[in-house]
Image (cartoon, rainbow, N blue to C red):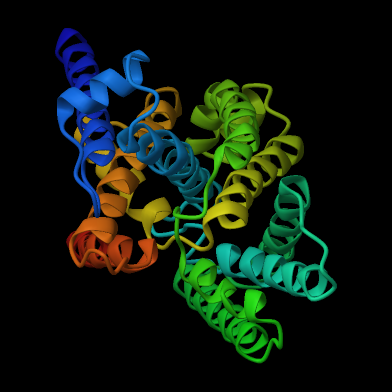
Length: 340
């Protein structure tokens, strides 16, 4: 018990330090490098007139905060889906849920921007949530007709491809030049985030994460089977509905503001579970948030700096690091089944 407690504390300390270091590096590095002294002066409030102040407060800080909260939200959303479907490679991107959200958001933006009407943050989240629920409904329909998880994953991937293809066609054939620029958003990016977005992102994701954390105990019982959870007093129908809603809200918020971000929701929860040596929700939910935040900070740093001033889409970088983890999970599952 003592050894496990030490492992948990060490794991949280490692993730917190990693996130803090990446947070600072992201403030310093970019197309224009800023020294650590300048960053400290700006954050301390002793420098509020220089170009460094404008770069940090108007561009980098909102983007970094978005990467922290949206990356953490996406990771927790993936963990919830993995519990719901009892499958380690279930996630918003793999199951096509993010692509469904992207499709509806793109259509909403095209419809309103084509008429010169700006779409509010609430409108974006509502559109993304609607798309997420449509895709989730389709996946649930399939899951009720087949017991094979491989078939469920394949159908989710195909759904994602169909939604992405329709979205790309809609964006490509849009007449307005502003709408065509939505292509960057459709590839996934934190670059367009400003303080107005942060005022929505932080409270929405925080509220959903807190509610999710309060579901830790019934989730732990659910991991041991529906019959066990029912014997422990868990209302399975309400619990599963809450699991779907929380996962959809978290992934919808990410898609609304950053576009579809791939593989974070699959890779990070698995890496975190390996780090802590447990799948207990009361530990993994906050750990997944920290891990997702650190992972997205790292990927966003690479996207901004490797080919600067050209910027990569965030999904390009997350796929490079996340896809090998998914392949490893699938191979590991096959070997485990072979031993049994």
